[in-house]
Every structure is written in structure tokens, then in C-alpha cells.
Length: 474
Image 1 (cartoon, rainbow, N blue to C red):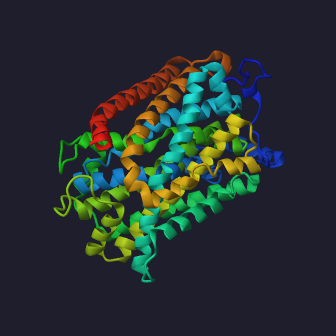
Image 2: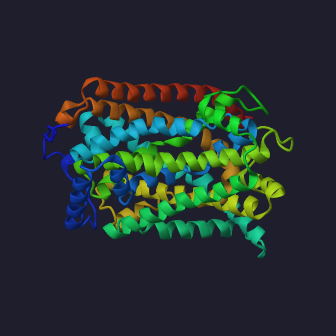
Image 3: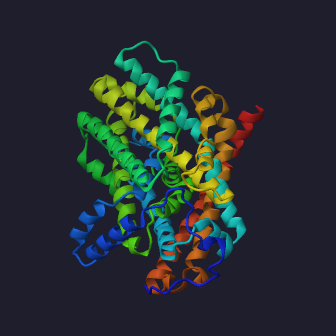
């Protein structure tokens, strides 16, 4: 690609860089660019080893998507269908990488903030749908994350032996942790790296927890395990649950509209630019795709080894806490309730803090706030009412979950369509607009993914509307 800059009015809002209270040090960025330039001439294995030291934003994506929705989808997939749906996690994340790679290319090639760029070059509808969808989903989905985290924490305390922990107090502990961790981001470039390092540790901690459970439960059939990754089977209904339901649930849980907002702004917060484009692709692969696929696959395998076709439950009624208790019966309380529970808790905690971070980025864009400033930190508190989910989520879920899924489902393909328009905009990308066969294939994949999401939205709305209205008025 040429180094020619994109066209457009340099005085427009999107040409202004990300407002940060403590921007990255120019000398540090200069040394990082020099290191990347030196790596560019080395063989691929040597480049990868060098890139491993610089990963960061991709891990935020895997930490965010490894939340309650992913945990539930993987739990039910393994418990009901065994190894058959192991292919869903890598397939879903590969679909997400198509769009995130395009977003990375656009953001790093232009250096422009993506929300005003989308408003200017794709249209206000797409920009506002993207921002409002990210904000709404990040606030609403705090409720089930707190419900999951607090219930798992209560169970872990019960295993450890102290007196019973009230669920409300467990929610307060989770909230305190989330406030402390989310306050780290944006204080300085160093604290941004510390925050990313903490999330990296959490992601691999989740992987290790579920890996230990799989080690203790063993693999029942290696041939079926391989078939689960390669056959792309969509099983029929079993235990009252259709295989297609879990396939679509797993795909929708992989990349959400709030993740799509968080990602390009986390790139800009690191000070990444054109020189970081190849690094960003490895960052998505090694920081998002690989750990996410491993973690979800391990959850599916662990539950398939112990819960598959268990007659003790029917349909999608088994909670992660109940699953941990069932695991404990077969492999003991350490690998069952303790280690599995810690892995689930890590998934919920990582999502909670990153949803807070997303609210801060959205508010910073919509209201002109400095990332890391006082008003930005207040904006990260917008999802705090979600702590009430530890007490009330089961009562409000049907009122909130179904319409939120539908509304946010609409916002995501709208945002994706906006990025498709940016991908084709010569005025926005200039000579960096992907051309030729590769550029056409890339755009076709982006459009195909958008159409797929619109189809999923229609299917979900039609299938869940009767259930929603029956619960609402019945």
C-alpha cells in the first residue's frame, strides 16, 4: 500500500487525534516504531517473537468476549451436544476477525478517530447506531455479569469454608474490584500497559483454570474431539434445545457492538499508527483468536466430559454454579467447584471492567472528554447500576434481555455496514483503500457477515417475540 495520505478536510473533527489526559510518550513511540521497522526485515518466526512483547489491544477483545454470554453458550453446547459444537468458537471468532481486521486497517492507516470518520464518510445513522448500541449493550449486560460473578463468588466462599457470603455483599466485592481496575486505564501510558497486562494475565488464567479441569476429566473420545472441530455439524433438537440455537448464540456472543467500539479506540490510546498495521493483525490472532478459542473449547470439553446427556436436568436450565457442583461430584471440589468456578468468575470480571471502559470511550467521543480525565472516569461509572443484577436479574431478565438482544442486534449490523462503506471510501482511505482481487474478497466477506447478522436478527426476533410477549402480558 502507498503511504499517500487519505483525502478530506484536515480541519474536520475526525482528523483530530484521540484526546488523552496523559498521551503516550513520543520518545517511547519512536523507539517502538524503530523496533517494528527492524522486525519488518526478519523472517516470520522472528517477527512473531518480537510482536509477542507488544501485544495488548487484542487481549482486551478476548477478555471482553469471555463473559457470561460466552460461558453460558459453551456450557450448554458441551452439556447438551458433547463435542459436536466445538467448531463454533473458532468459526465465530474468525468471522469477527474479518471486521476487526478491517477496522484496524482503517484506523491505523488514517490515524483518524473512527466515530467522527464514520459520521462524515458513511453517514450519521451508522455512527449513532454504533455508539448507542455500544453504550446500551455495555450498560444492560452488566446486570447478568454481576449476577454470574456474585453467584460464583458465593459458591467459591462456600467451598472455602468461611461463613456464608450474602449475595449482595458478593456483588459489592465485585463492584469494588471493577472500580479499582477500570480506574487504571488512561492515567498514563504506563498504566494503560499495566491494565492490558492485567487483562492478559486474566485471560490466560481463565485458560489455565479450564485446562486443569479438562486434564482432570480427561478426553473421552479423541476421534469425536477432532470431528467436533472439523465436521461443522449442526445437530437437531435435544433436551428441548435446537443445535442451531446454540450455534447462533455462540456466534453472537463472540463479537458484540461494544467490542467493535472498544477496539479501534484502544489502538489509538496506545499511540499505534501505520507502522503497527502488521502488529495489529498478529495482536488479533494471538491476543484474541487463540486464547478465546482455547478457553471456550476447554469449557465445552469439560462440560461434555461430565454433563453430556446427564438426566438430572433438561433444556437450558443449568447454571455455571450448578455445573461446577456437578463437576465436583466427578473430579472433586478443587477441579470442580474451585478451579472451574474461578475460571467462570474471571470471565465475568474481565467483561465487567471492559464494558465500563467502553462506556468511557463512547462518552469521550460524544461529549468531547479526555480519556483518563475526571469526566471520563465518571462516564465509566454509567454501568454501575448493573450491580443490582446480583439480586434482581432473574426478575428483570425477560423484560430486558430479549429486547436488548434485538435492539443491539440491529445496531451491530448497522455499525458493520458503516465500516463496509468506509472500506470502499476513497475519500476516507485514499491510496490505502484495499484494491484488486484481495480487496474485493475482503469487502465481500465484510458484506456477507453483515447480511448474516441481519438474517440472525430476523430469526431471533421472530423466534423470541412470542416468548417475550407471553412473559410480559401472561
